[in-house]
Image 1 (tube, rainbow, N blue to C red):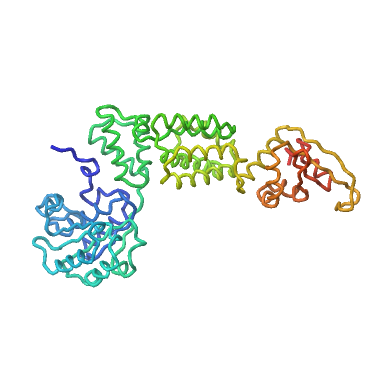
Image 2: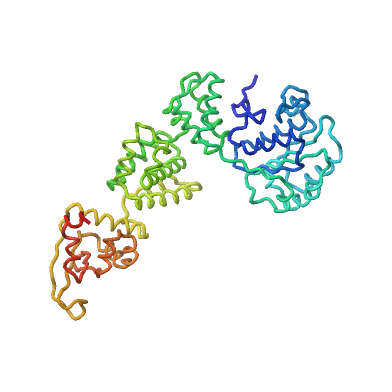
Length: 476
């Protein structure tokens, strides 16, 4: 006998088996028990959330000879015929391949004939948004006033493409993305039924990889079980099969980026490629890791909600403390842009390498974020004790104060091109500085010296002293 995929083998057969859609299930059960069954339903939601399965359960429930609390019995001849796909009363149509006017006209002609068995003839049109405008128009009248023995169930993943004339004729049910906890609980039921030993951590990762789709998660589980058939499925084995990356790897990558060590960052990438990791998935996982860093940085109350193991939490919190929120946001923008570009790229590795180099070396960019990063780096060097030289110059007629004199402050030497960018974008840089530094620097005049240094000219010795007196700056 041929093998049946897990998502088909464990497809819901009653409303109680549908996970994460209680708001839909309860409404449909009440309609069936009260005999107030609508004639047209629209099931909307992302893939793998149970739209088609719920449609089949509804088709069985309205025709079942012995319904139980609004659920099909599953034992009568009609229930068995619908479950096996042999019923003449339940017609499933794939609108992706049957989207023309003629296909819909055929349905309109067929609804004239009453069901051969049971009470209702049920038409399930999957991916209904794929119908052509003409097909939608051909369906309108029949959808609004079908015979009393006909029920239409339309399913779609893109409800925004459904004409308003169709929406107004249907009862709309929005299927929610299923939570990771609910997916994990369902996966645990499946592995127990299949007598497969799986680590909870591995199940949790698969549930999270499903991204709200129970069907996707079950398919991933099926793939992992098949690869390690007869063995215990561990977290490391799941990573190996799915080509994904452990959190600890991202911790090492972030450390290399923070130290501006391009060689170390590219070495991490080289190891991932050598181990067969898929770069598109790599960028998605890295984006999620950076998101967790930002959440932990900005809200300590949400630490418990982050899916970080206790083994990696210490290293994770170190990365949180050593990176500013502004820096993490810049990294997220870079990697998010990379995720969009890499999808259709031929040289995916080159794109990832360029993004890592940009993260390590802000001076390779001229964007506002990179300029702020470079100013932050200069501030950090000053805060860490880099020598800062101050000197007084004679007051000129251009000085705002007659008796203060200009006090220039020389910051560490950098590339002349960098300083020119700082001078040119000085006002934008001021807007991104902390409050105290912004207030003081707003009184400075930036310029470039002959020997390639950034010169900040102040009209107040006290203000200049703020940048030269480390103790005073730390107190502020």
